[in-house]
Length: 567
Image (cartoon, rainbow, N blue to C red; front, side, top):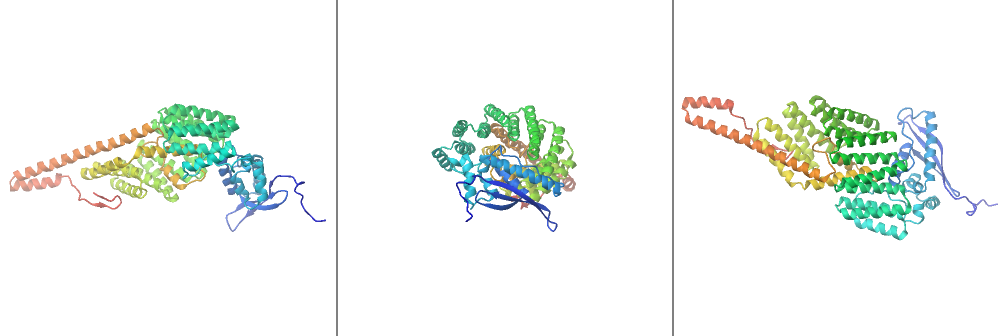
């Protein structure tokens, strides 16, 4: 008898069993690995995975399929106890089994990478056979949000491949991406046409998950071009689809996006209500990170309404959530917003403390943009507190970072801040130098279009997370999100243009004031000189002594190595 396997009598399928859990330590930081057996009719092999690997799988799966099974939450304390490890092993087994029962998730690239099926042809064949996406399509599903760097031609080629394969689901996903790309390029008509085609594809195959994603993207496209009423209708439609799918996270995202739109149109109270609904949904779904982000947004809305004390309370709750989620970038953002709020109600010392904490966190995680913003706010608070030298020092450091980051907007605010300090010190000449520099930068920025484009890219990413987390995006976004003022990016294009125009007008008004002060000072000098020339020798000596006591001191011009300006 020769042992052999008859392929015709074997049961098709694949099983993934978590056989045991192993705890490692104590010489290293204790951790647990889970030994998994991958079984088919023809092979058995073992792999080991940690909880962090399961977490990465969950994040990647949700970019492919929004309704992917949920991963058991991470535990901070008591995670090494035998009882908990046994329970966690059962939870992870149920999680993997649920993924295998969903053909789209089982056939996805993230799950294949998690199992390490590359080179194991039988396993890949079984997963492909079970997945409807590859049965007659062009491969595993692409995510609803692709990485940056794709061109329109590349999207069109993939759309053509999907049409040839008659794969409507894939075609809808790629058309969704094409719409986002065209939206960012300012092609409104073509972006909307791509969305209509994507929506039609999802309707043909009754893909509710796809309809949900397309409705949200459609809303973002209308928002990008200031069509808020139509955008609200699309969001309401997406909200009803999410409710029918019992997708709490997507429903919360819809409330959050609706809050952003309401805020941009000036309906602050309605925006606050939508933000509260979003927070409740995020907490219900145990997504503390998104809840903290939405609370920060709610704090910004309340701050914009003048409800500073309520904004402080909400921001403090956001700070607690972000500490629990260990989100250092978000924590720095919230600390910076709290500093602004306390500065606004006159608590300069409290504001300095929050800004110092935010600055330390930004330096720790390498967020240079956040560091520049914190220094800029510290300069403002020191100026308000009367610490003029500290204010100029903070502004100079922020300006140096802004030059290094090629942040022209940040340079503008730094020059304006330094000019304000010198104007309060009575040094109109240096104030004029910095105001002229700020005005020149303002006029050189092709600004509002660029800023609004970046803001709308962030709005699209908030609804459709990118395939990979890019630190630069986080830093660019962070330009620490502030309740009002310089770093606030409004999604409504007309409001952005108006704010930028008001900023330029404010600088011009300050420049007029500084020049007027300069003229008064020069006139006073001329009057004093005429008095000295008319007087006699004794009177001239007296006038000289008096003039030396009353004449305003004009410091010599110096070169600032941080900003590259002669002052």
